[in-house]
Length: 210
Image (tube, rainbow, N blue to C red; front, side):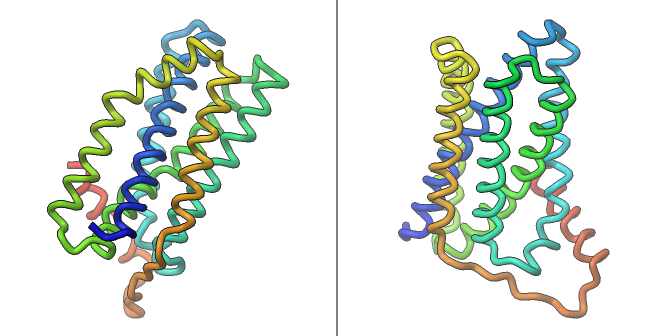
């Protein structure tokens, strides 16, 4: 495996762990605030819907920015958004649910760029695509197994504020790692319209999801 691919795999391992830990913490905190299963169940719906919607925009954004820069900018924006939410919850523990939902949706929108960009970067960084895909899958499945436990343990032992700070460190580390990714530029098709680009993104998104 190339050095660039190892860096990509490590950055996504950390980023996925941070994302899943964040999901657990937000779900637990909203349940404590609202004591409502309906309010709590909105969190995964908002996260999944926002991430799905953003994948349609990946081909359009990649026409103007290098792929590695998209990864870095979105990860950095997620980190700043989580930092803002963490500080807000520290000073105002009973934040309105609508405010929390808005921040969660913003982070999830940014997170929607991750999977398509990661797959595309893999094809540039790794020559053995089968092995590369296997490594990324193992990393993703490993995080899926331990991530919920890590988030739950952090919440139980540190409380919401301490757990969010640890998760914020994960986000910051993922941001640093993505900033070191080598430059990859998508070749632009000047004859392609914006609508065609978005439609292409929709087809790609559907192929990834299903």
